[in-house]
Image (tube, rainbow over all chains, first blue to last red; front, side):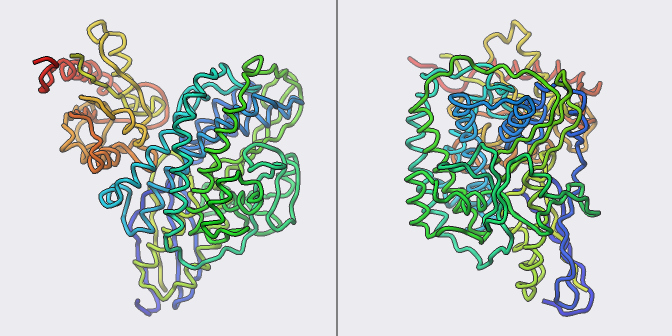
Length: 432
Length: 161
């Protein structure tokens, strides 16, 4: 490394994140002066374009925000609108929603674990190079992802931007036969996901612990995907979805087109680590066993080990999907009637990347008067910067190229979905 | 023997010329001469593409590209050279794009027997519907070329010979 007073180093672009941004690290005489995750993704004004639309439209419109987690947008949108209309969709329809979510968790986690994240631990610059030496692992990851997409096709009508979801339920119910056809592959997938946990728990994770609080949905007796209760791992937060915006504050920062979130004046993290910390006791049996064997304990605060937790969650998705299909009795109708009324509704669900909040204000005829969407990655941005600041400080003795690479790798640990429009992140290290 | 050919139009119709793949697929669907052709539209998720082209004899991909050539120019490449052109396409939005999927499939031995890519040089990839005039003009020509590829006799001997 160089100890000159002023240095500017541009890092190389990295792939394997969702969206366009630049990480800028400034070091003054070896000490970290500032870290900014600069998002210059153009804002897409989804909240504004929802205004004036019908209350039935958000599941289809907001699904377009993300090609990796459209189900999350559909589920939070439906929950919020049904809440505004004084409705709760339960029973078999809620189970089908959970099943659809299992598909999304599986495809999103398989993509991240195998294609985006594992190469960092094994010393490759991407999945293609890794596949040359780890062919059977990559094939296993692709097959897991394929099953996730297949579940989304069967329940959601399409693997990307599903078209079968509506306020109140679905347009068409899958038949028991269609669901039954998934079981054979799900049995294989549960074993494959367990093998994934074993594989990634052998990766060497740098020693690093986040000091943020972790926030996720909590569902009694279940590993969370749908629900209303939002909790913090510290126990300092236990609220209904309706109170989310009273506790979480969004603010503009000059260097980013995405809003930053804070809670109780500080950073917090949503996502797999948060879900695991709050609901590890509710893991289904085989996932619980695999987590224990992987040495995860009751909480994991090392972002580099999030790959292990995501792999455990792939097992959750498989076990949950089999439970739901096993007990499936077709609901009497594909959806329940949701009559509009004037009011405000709040909906939350667990996207693969973490808690996703929607709020809608409806006029009496169901016209949307206002919409607010708080996605997981914007909630995580402040925590990511906070971690980068600490991580860069702890590793400031590394040469610039190595430090830039390590920081890129840390960013990937959070599986950020900056947006769906482009696909690179520049890292810039400045030394003064 | 019926050749298992698949035409995949890749892109996002809400990003102007990125919709050229879908436009070719729509034209094939309306063409009686293409009644036998299996054609799908896809947003461009690489892992999904890999699952679509597994066990196909021939895959024809139509996608938008930006290489600096005049808008509407049609590049035709077979898969051996394919990764470079597909990699130049700015239209894959996720971790594994078309170029990476071809490269990955090559490593895994999961490519179809033959893959032909038609990449149409885009002029406008902004948000909105509709193709720019030169790309629109290229749609008919690409559709004919795709049909010619699908009709081209397979070099695999038919069953029973």
